[in-house]
Structure formats: structure tokens, C-alpha cells
Length: 309
Image (cartoon, rainbow, N blue to C red; front, side, top):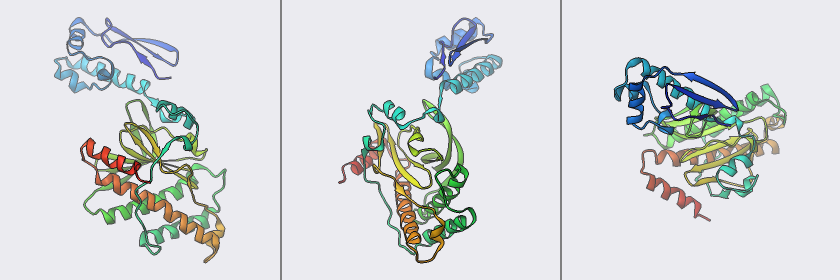
């Protein structure tokens, strides 16, 4: 459970409670410090966002400003729930008022896709890199570890980003591995985050365990990719809930038999890697185009996707 804090201006000391363990800390504040906090109405969520400079701007001396800024940071870290504590899709759906435990209970929307030619340079290079990994690491099995899965995930993401950069030359796009993401209610490290300047536009979580346990990112308007490398789910998070591109994942079979030129396994690998990349490129291109747009424009864009048949 998240921690609870008392109001920031209890006389000279503040109690914090985390998962049932209580600890009291004397902050050493005097009446002048408490009066500043009370006068500026620094309570609740506002307190969690306070910094040393903000306390100083309110007229507080350096010592108390540092102490309170550090304490606010500690409270925020205890209050926020880690992504990893969300153990099931059902638990996350409940937060959005959805009664169910499967992708089929989430409203669907047709994703914006970007059609690729079979001989696209980045697609061909991606397949080549995947085959190298198959040759070195072997078939991806149900019990293969997360590091092995991320080898394939990163290969597909990097190739997709190169294509997006190629078709949207005026936008700066970066892939940040192992990025710490902090939201209003939750915090955690995601395997990959895709950013346009300083705006987060897509996060990717690679999982060894069942993909249904990996949903937990909560943002205003952002695309999410949840994948085991073999199964790929594409999720849209908006202020009014969660949507999924499909009830079923796109499946890629990473098997050594695909190394044989012209085999059905190779054709299947190429076809499904292409399908995944077309969705990834389409989602990124769409989100990149609306960076900096007003909320109403973004809302209209999403509503347009949802009304498509």
C-alpha cells in the first residue's frame, strides 16, 4: 500500500506510515517556518511537489528549506506505488472502472499503421539482426530469460525508430533504455522509453512472465507496448481510460528453423516482424505529429481512431 502523510504543518514533527510500520521524525521547524507553510497553503499533493527553491521563494531560511524539500521527496517516494506491484491486468483495469481480467474487456481501437515494403532497408536489416541472434542464442523458448527477450525487442524498436526518423525528418526522437518514470500515482523503471525532445510518447516493457501481468503505466496520452518478444500488445492510455489495438497479440516465433532461406518459418518470421514494425512506426509517427498540440486537438485525433470501423 502507498504511504500516508499527515498534514505538513503539524507542530514541529511529522509522522509517516508505510505498510503499517510507523515512524516519527522531528523536522525541527519553528513557528516562523510553520506559519510560512500555513500561509502559502502547502498541503497534500502540493507539498509533495515542493523543492528547496520554492520554499526559499516563500521566504523560508536555507536550513528549513533543505530539510522540508528532502522530506517532501521522501514522502513522495513512499507514497508512489511501484509499477512492479501491479501483479495482474485485472488489478489495473479495476483502477479504470473496467470489470474484467483480459484484453477482451478493454475497448478496441484500430491503430494508425505505416505500411512497409518487403524490401524496406530497415526491415531487411532488422530481419538480418534477428537471424544473427537466433544463430548465436538459439530458439526463444517459454522459459527464456528477460535479457534474451530484450535482445529481440530492442532490435525491432531500433529499426522502427530509424524508419520514423526517415519519414519525419523534422522531429528529434530518442530511445532511452531503463528509464525511471514517475507519474501522479505510480513510479517505476521501464525497459525502453521513446521520447520526442522531453515529451514521453511511448514506453515499452519486456517481460519473461505472462504479458497480462505487465500493464501498469498510467499517463495522459501515451502509447504503451507490452511484449514478451514473442507476443506484442499495443495499448493507448488517455485521460478517459485504456484502449487496446486488439484482443489478441501479434505473435512472432523466434525459432532456429527460420534461419533456413525460403522456409515457411522464415516467411512467417518476416511477415510478423513486419506487422509489428508497421504498428510501432504508425503509433510513433502519430504521437510525434501531435507533440505540442493543444489537448482538444489530441482528443479529436484519438476519437477519430476510436470511431473507425
